[in-house]
Image 1 (cartoon, rainbow, N blue to C red):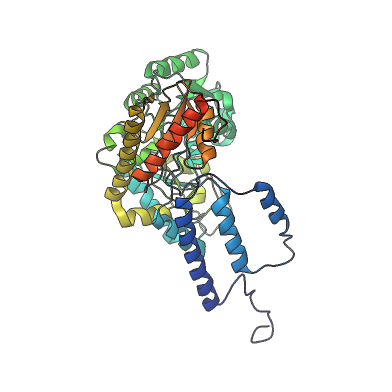
Image 2 (cartoon, one colour):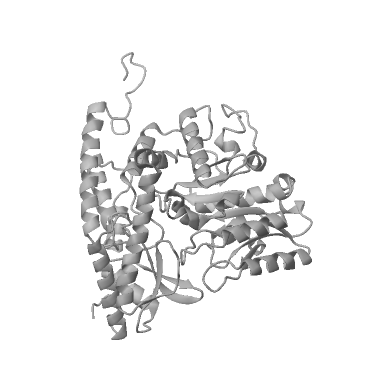
Length: 484
């Protein structure tokens, strides 16, 4: 009971006293540092027996409490052995990085204060901080006009926002009538090498998956400007309504950059919303040397960049940037009496798909505030240097590269024509490294992406050895991962 005898005390586990909390925090921090050291030395792939884990999990009946220290230790150990370890520098997989230390610090701070970023009235500091970051990032991309945007949970959400803004800009009645506002079926355009989440986005936006027109490439993984112009003309002739061009800066399969300048010119000529999906490749903006690769991005109406990719923040920390911020409150306006404020240019719930959400931008703020653009630029350039080193090693062994991306993605073919997917399975099964199968211009390739900022020459040696041993095993007819 409380001192006045009216209330029971707070639960001591849910809300511990400062001294108890400090002891647990110190043990947790030490345990996490130790786990990171082990996972960076250990296998990249999971080693946990899933059936055994399910039996352990079933023992948590959630009726009988267990000691917090015990549950924390159990959870860390299972995570250490039960997932693909993006924190391992031999993870050469998708665009998931080893998270930086400043970003991890930001997660702990955000977890403590737990701000609600729907409203600028309840969370004025985090809202202002994120707004500052969005503006700086938009300026870094060279966008003009009325700059704005927001953080999002991922690139798909940011790209979804772009389509909703494009539809609203094309016909303001879309906010009320949806696709019925248009005289014909709405259409939007991406390369066939795009992230296929665009199909889901068409569905979510209410215009249907068929609204997406996948444009042919130039044979080297980039959207063909001629094919794009032809597709728009064909759709207009059928009475359909083009609304948006979405160019990609850093395709998932090959790290290719669409012809941004040409796409911008077509969008302007056709009076379409121009979006650049730079979820991964947008990080090149941090590097003075690599920024010119994204020439044309400054002409976009909107841009997607994922900080949780090449900027190495924790998941998920995407950004939607726009030079036409006046469209956001038109697309996402809402009115309710229970919100503490309704400031259209400030309140995130009036400018984004989300309502309640976590403060996401602190991860990028702590990163940029402590290393600056030069530090992030050095991180990005280092990844490109690592990729080039891997490329040279493999070419010397007879491998052939099929993509010419200037970024840190290699699409490689083995010298003996070995079946790519079997080869990849063998590498992954070995646990020594992680690579992915992909299709580049309809050819199966071994996709190698440099995702970790601490990848060393020893890690490169391990990757190359694992690829060669897997190739020899597949050539000899061995089972994936048997080492023959």
